[in-house]
Length: 200
Image: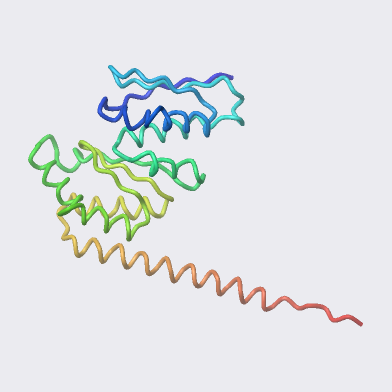
């Protein structure tokens, strides 16, 4: 069974996708069992493979390419290849800014923050990687991490204060930590209840 998928990335991101001496492209091809053809004029990127499904990870390759096209560094995008739990998601800021360029820039400015502070805080508190590129925001992380980061971006896009967004993220992180502790305690208690039979 053969696979072929075309995805378009901005021309200014082609260099990042190819990498120095083609290393990024080669890494994706090797790890996903695919071949990648890049048209540097149009930005069209064709992912193909003739390998059996179990020997390729073609959809993951498409996700990594799309993530790099959306402004993520290859190193951050590789996280998609490290675990099946990690996902890539995007949101369109036009949904909140309409078609107003001024409103879009204002929202992007709030998400990025002065010197990138807001974006870094969202990443640190949610665990997800966040990239703001054009009118899109991209997320890489596990489901809970991506949901938290998305909720934070939506709040900022709708006009919430940064402090309120950070508080929401900190509360969610505390709850998650408590849940993990309870789960660990429950499992520990169950282990304690196991009776080791005595030798007669």
